Length: 265
Image (cartoon, rainbow, N blue to C red; front, top):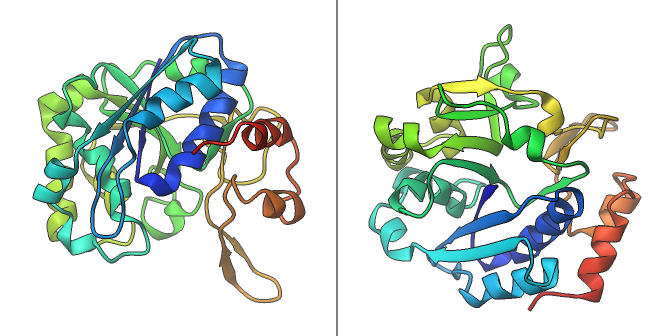
């Protein structure tokens, strides 16, 4: 399986936790690509992080990690209209995956705030030969961005990507141009939804709400609380106390304990 993560040094722990959860549940070999860049005050992930992950997650077995610094490419075509949104501009690194020849075929893109509770192979095996991306509808997207009846506005935190079709259609290039020229609330997610040939898949592969019995991937997205007042709440997997005390989630404790025993640099 080919998996793609993106970001700067600030997301290393998220990748570590995600991979620990993935390898716990699958027997398949995993090839991981991490796209990174230095921009403004954000620092790129060093290439040595790949070796560290291989050793600490799997002891060098079943896991191959390659860190790819695309600072020059990213800084050469910055999403200038969206550099100051509440979302880090390095989320948009995934829109540069077509610039990396090694990233090809079918790729599973994952945000760094996901944890797996079942094998992701059924997700990876979904047929996407006739589309560019496949994903789960966004929890709130139908109310603000998509068609409420069709519920077709996808959350981009878990995406199956067909790199061959994307290179043929030049999808990522079109998305990069849109993010560069038009300010949007969720820039790359909105661009992908607007321009791609896409496919909806079952919510169990990107559960943005409460964990259900069939949930494969739990995505720790921002959610809203309405009492005693409306507010947005963001709790990430590495905020261990909040995961326990506020979300009342305990089933990933073995992953958390492993990360504590074998911390990354």
